Image 1 (spheres, rainbow over the protein chains, first blue to last red):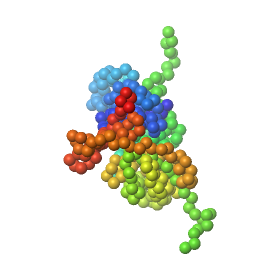
Image 2: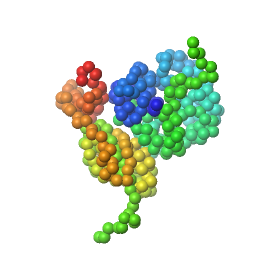
Image 3: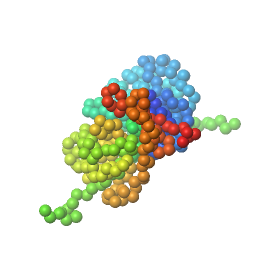
Image 4: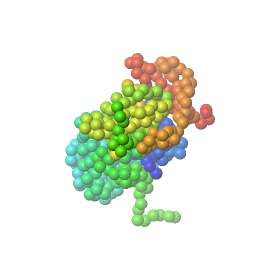
Length: 209
Length: 159
């Protein structure tokens, strides 16, 4: 099931309308930051929690307050914070890689994320809405993340970062924009269907009764 | 002027693009300029010359955009970066790619006709436009003269 890993409901669109429009574009689910769980027009709305914290302890407080079943993403910061962030329990994805300082998301963070099954979230919003140096910087960071992704194999998730239903993009547009920084169609398909696996990770032992 | 023989003509691809919101009536020239700006910003002048994009047809809720064969992926990426046309917020969603316009026309799904439910568009009396069965847009003209669009959904019991 294709999932848009980041939509925000603090814009001009209700979560119901966002789900309807996402369904029309070909998504089966959306992660809506700040929205309650539900299903509208056959599209599942997964509640999302986005945490931005100055240090790992404050981040941990935010993770503990996240509701059950929410998709928790933690905003990346400087190098030491990122290394600790990948180790925090309850984090599904690391976000804001295009905003953190150069080389702050390094090979140590990448290896830790791969070992713990924490995804890195790539947003289309800086590619769609920015122009000039800001967009060039985002493309450079995403290409750098992709090098580490191929080396260490941590999961990727893709989100539109839409605050309005006019900012949602179709999977075809996701693929075209991701091709700009080198992510191929298979990688896009894996990233768009990665949220379900992060919310219900496979474990070697499963309690059945 | 004698036309070129078919074997010497440039091969082209046509993209069927859905426009949102569907009730915004787009003109071909502002749309061409917006797409051209997006292509140039993303790929530069050289890339824009290679893509060779043009707006071929504008219909209710859809447009057909042309490009050189092999460049449809780059044009799709550029179309995704279009956020407005002539100051109006618009999204362009590529639906299909084909070598002929005729085959694209067969893939056009009818767009529900928007119904104005009332209102003048002022802050106290916003205009409400219903699209299909479940979508309502509330349009307010604020003091800057801009259109502020909010989106709501009709409750199933109220349909």
